[in-house]
Image (cartoon, rainbow, N blue to C red; front, side, top):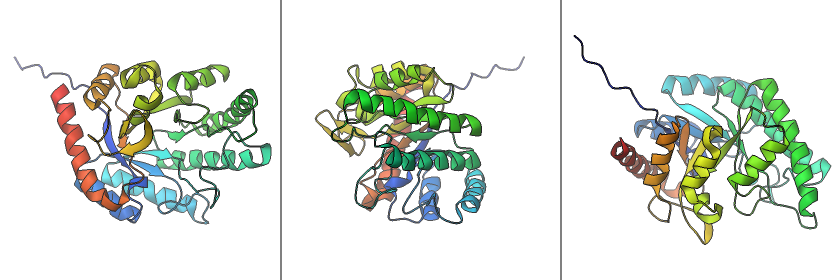
Length: 290
């Protein structure tokens, strides 16, 4: 009688965000990640790795998909580049701005969805934006609902998942806020949730485990970084207060097998070292969990 092999438990696909490799060409960044054993990448659209508005964006996306498949790398598309739409105003315009400006953000997200479809990406991750000065909270919320409805419609047409990311200081700041927006949109299948583990110690009332469990089966993307409760500052793993073991144990209990990518946009100066150290630490945690 042959021995019965134990079932393989789902585990996250460990990745690294390209916004943490701003001093590397994309091919070199992917080489570094591949050599360190990563099996996913979080691709931030914009300078310097993938200009979503360049004349050759479509051909570039087709070629990149072939490259990622050859490397065995899954991909999520990130849309949080600081100055992708405005060279002066960080993260502006956003979905909460007036109609003309918000249309630029919607167009960018639609293009991100098109690129994600070509890449066969797990999802497009996006956020609400900070409420503009002088705009009342209820007005900002109605604007967000209306603009998010356009983005969801584009995702539905392209058969692409979205991951709404709660961000400290933004209108959608917590998983509860994301769930509220989703409910007002009619709980569309296309709209999932991105959780940044570092954000959880800053704004989530029930911490990292509570946020992940609240997202539950809507969780489509995880960003991994450390953070301290008093500041929205992405830190290397071990430099803050995030209980990574609890986070990954919770992901295991949820059966999450999507991308969990290191998110360190201010650490490009040490990207190769941090990439190597981060995956070693995460593999130790995952192996310890079993």
